[in-house]
Amino acid sequence: MKKTLILLFALFGCLTSAKAQNWGGGVDERDIHFGFTFQVLSSEYKILKRPDWRDPYYDMVTNPTQPHEVYRGLSRITSQEKTGYGLGFVVNKRVSNHTDLRLTPTLVFSDRIINYVYVGADNNKQQVVESTLIDVPLGFKVKSDRRKNFRAYMIGGLKYSMDITSAKKTSNAGKSPIEMVLQNKKNFLSYEAGLGMDLYFEYFKMSPEIKYSSSFNSILDRDVNNPYSYPLNKLMLRHVTFSLFFE
Image (cartoon, rainbow, N blue to C red; front, side, top):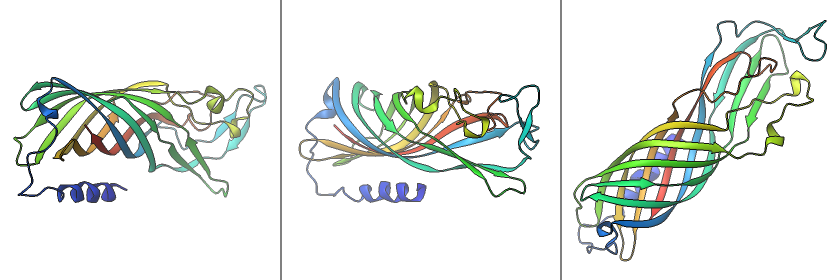
């Protein structure tokens, strides 16, 4: 997935021409301008486990006076990359000839996967955390000089995320431990940084961009009675995002 994003990013760099006219619709000269974006992203967790994560887990919910063993122990917990998609719009504030302030609210559909491999068991488990996010990134864009119809840039900033997935899908009420689902926090902050290029056409500007982001803190919503969250100490969410901006 990451290699594909890099190849796509490089491909768009070939669209510029040395003899191209000075197009772009004057978008860079406006104090404030707007646009929209399409995104493809790869998401995964950085998993930090508890010291006793391999220990057997006992059901303390069904019958607290006589807990029984749910699984004997874990041999491995891994995060699997999952592709997602996003659609959003752009509000760009010109600060100077080489700097912009950008707000890019985006609706993101991106599930996350964790695999649990148990010792001596054939019934290994996979937890799919369904996620629909409203991302609100605020970025500071630093641009190079424009060469014909090409300009490179770097961008970095902060991102606020709110998970609007239905609470009914993630509720563990009334479920046995083995039927429970892994839960994440509804709100969290991330830092992000990336590279991009502005490509100028006759009436608009298109900007392919690749960006990395990671949550500042763990997004794990801990429940000590959940066999899937109990062995975990922290879950950090990471994204690699390829975006196309049209302004």
